[in-house]
Length: 80
Image 1: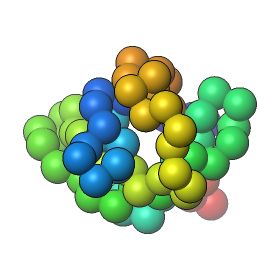
Image 2: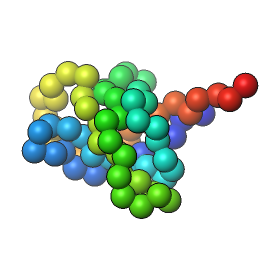
Image 3: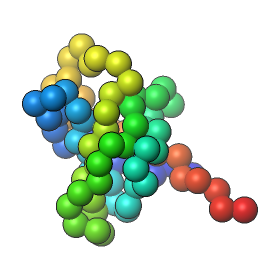
């Protein structure tokens, strides 16, 4: 199952800040709508019920401001 979040802003360092409806573990892989990896979670902060996550991009983003408002996803790990 995928958990959807929205890109909120881009930090001065070029990291992506997104908001998710639930806690996302640090080092989780973050995907775009085409299931392409855009980066990994480096920091989780804010309210527990709807935290912000900071994503360190896998590569330099050419048009970072164009990402604001876009959906990003994390694959929920299966507990078997």
